[in-house]
Length: 81
Image: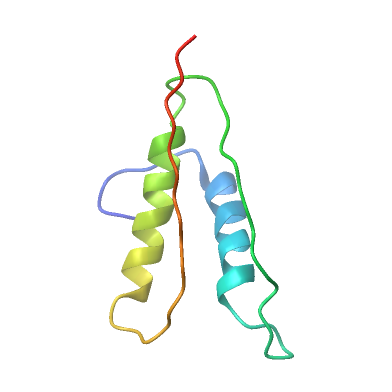
């Protein structure tokens, strides 16, 4: 967990991490499983941006100082009614 407090979204973080790891980590045959796309959809103010921010911080902190090369694209959108 990052230095900033983050609570109540462990299930969602675990799912997003699983999807990322499926792309970034080789399986037992030495293959990557291919690209993934995940959408984070919810009502305004429930923490979508914070969830993605936490995912980014976790991934960035784990990969500092390693030679592992992976790609992560985070897209954000704000829509009004």
